[in-house]
Amino acid sequence: MRIIHVLNSLCAGGAESFVVSLAIAQARLRHEVHLFTYAGVLDDRGETLAAQLSRAHVSHHSANARRAAHKLRVPAQIARHIGAVRPAVVHAHLDAAELFACLAMGLLPRPRPVLVRTIHGPVRRFGQLTQTVLMGFFDRTVDCAAALTTARRGSSGAAHLSIDNGIALDTLETTAAAVGLRAHLGVAPHELLILNIGSFTLHRGLTVKGQDVLIDALTRVRSAVAVVFAGDGPARAAMELRARARGVLGRCRFVGRVSGTADYIAASDCVVMPSRLEGLSLAAIEAACLGRPLIVTDLAAFAPFAGPATLVSRSGSVASLGDAIEQAAANRAALARTAEERMAHYRARFDITNCARRYLEAYTSAGADDAPAPTPRAA
Image 1 (cartoon, rainbow, N blue to C red):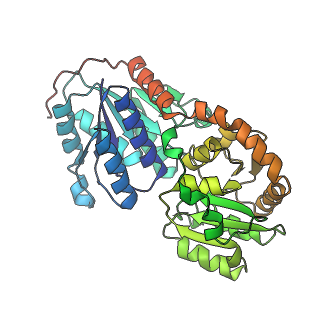
Image 2 (cartoon, helix red, strand yellow):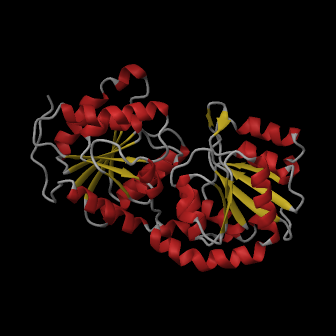
Image 3 (tube, rainbow, N blue to C red):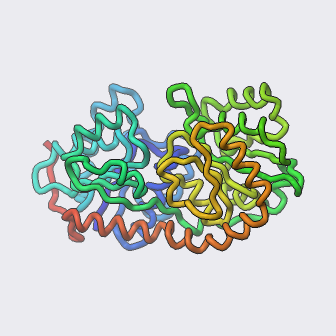
């Protein structure tokens, strides 16, 4: 089967990392896979993702359209790319790419490829409007977690189904650096090392990943705790200033974006995700698959991690998160044992190969054929 994934860009984002992993997994299952991004590679993480695609023989074509005027040409460029590749499936990800893919399909004569999209997280106001307008254009809509599908029951248009995000398990291998990482970070053996992975981005003036809540919660924690913030973004400097103002900067380590995420997870005692908005978090999946306990918020997207190795706090609640951290410190050994026992379960559930097979089944059920689609001509 020939597949084109359409994505905004290659950059440091969970959806972007997942799409690349999915494309590579589908290629390893002996399908011809292409990726089209309208904005191209945006940062160092994007360069890494592009290199991964190249090694896996997944072609990446970009319009390099980053200015508004240039984006007007993107639908026609996607249509021409579809005409050259002749895919059975066009699979769009994220709002702008969904819109451009729909417009591109309108420029093609019938028969057209099957059009699929994945919704990667909670729908915001602009996204809800886009999805309402575009719903009927998609042959299949996939949510990245069952809880998101349940929340949208009753939507019109193509039936929703859910396919859990997956990760490439071979990327979870740790290096020798993980052994000395605690000492390198200045964390004593008796301290509970908590890891937070996420970008420092804002939505309506609040951090999406809830780093401000975590910093404030530290002021209530009396146990010996150190927190490592792995990530970067426009609000990072403000969060460092917040930690200083709250008197907890000495308990915080702001390490920026890291390439060896598995090493940091392996060195930690617990991974905390105090998110205000979230899809099915790849960081949470990685932590669970490496046998680490989790502290998450009560968002629907974290439902797959419910169990004895996961503590839940109320989203946005400093007091609730502080209590969860104290509970993690008090039950450190028991949580560690339980998380390791659950590791095999999560690895089976979130294996990207199984995820890729489920998407291929979704394509087929939507009408895609393994044979190449007839060559369309752009209008």
